[in-house]
Image 1: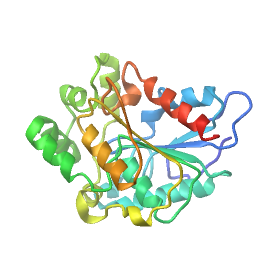
Image 2: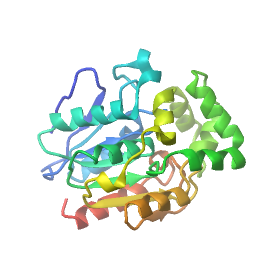
Image 3: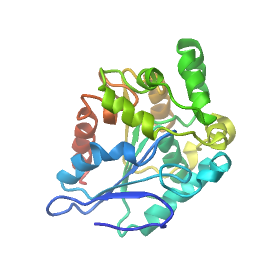
Amino acid sequence: MKFAASATLELINRPATGTARPTPLLFLHGAYAGAWLWDKHYLPFFAERGWNTSAFSFSGHGKSRGTEQLNTLSIQDYVDDLAEVVAAMPVRPVIIAHSMGGLVLQKYLESAEIPAAVLLCSVPPQGLLGSTISLLFSRPNVLMDLNRIMGGGEPQLETVREALFHQDVPRAVLNECYMHMQPESMRALWDMSGFDLPRPARMRRPPMLVLGTEHDTLIPPQQVEQTAKALSLPFEILPNLGHALMLEKDWQAGPERIAEWLLAQGF
């Protein structure tokens, strides 16, 4: 299954190998990133197992529209991007969302319904404040470098390593992240810090899997637990992985657990 949303939103489609399962998967990236994050491992993994898979870049990210207006883009703008992509799909997808993308998904569910969702190292409904305070005291250098990237500065390879990874990571993977990382919208970051947070009481509640990782510097396990409590759901912590679990050496742990859960849900 291939489809096209707006020509101004970057979209990656990886059709299923063989007979496709009926429900496609749509992947949402986090801050400072783009659709590229999913295409190295996750999209091929699920396509090879029969799912039609897609990922897109929010406005101002990757090759999508709005780069010149990045700092004016809000979380609601990203929600509108998601609604646009879903509306263009012939079948409503299961959505798998990472980090900031998880908060966008929570906001989207205030007004939309989907078959199922996976929140992966997601910003909790309470927002970024807890994570920011934790970084300030535990790893102030990471917080300072993220702020510098937000202002258009170049990321430092060691900060990329410390912020995103737990396992030893090849230099080539670090360089790939370095080449793709970009500033994030100041307005979107303010929204996630308290100005436009999800309202769990208004959210539609499809079957939902809440996953985090043991060594996530940016969204530590306590933040994952906050998400689960706010949504009255259980949660799971994948061991020996960091925030960018889709690029770690043992990246298979994430999609294997997600695929197991999807099959148990009948997808």
